[in-house]
Length: 185
Image (cartoon, rainbow, N blue to C red; front, side):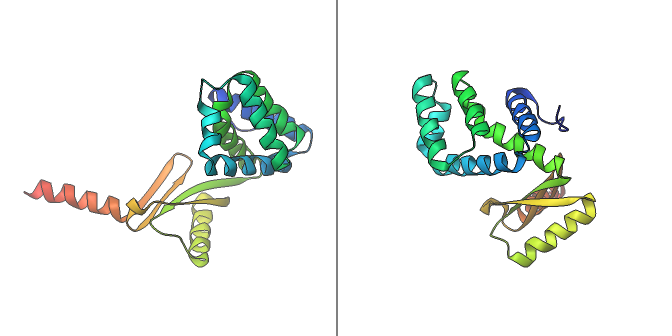
């Protein structure tokens, strides 16, 4: 069994099985590359997201569409078989979760911690390095930073490492100030 206990539910079971198979076949990084390509394809295509989620699309149509996509992307056999099984079981809708869970398992396996960093604007290389170094000091492990941009943050950063959230965003500071002002009135 893999080392990650956080992979739960349906997507966790498929991700764990894929991780264990990839580990025994010494294909952990190849499957990671496959899944990153698939994740990008899902993020960039409304049609693909529809194929994954729609209950009215038949199993055969889903399987054929995914097989064509996987061939086009040059995906390995192990990943193809996993996606094929998801199609066969009518569980293709969990694919994004399987991808996320697998990548988390691989990071944990490699001794990395993934930090979700949300900022109002794109960070410069120096800023990313500073955040990564600071997180490494706090967490005590190698940190992989997953950057997201959300203009609603207004300024500052929101950093999530596992279940811990460090919110130093301007939005949150303004909300706290607003609550304090209401308490004075």
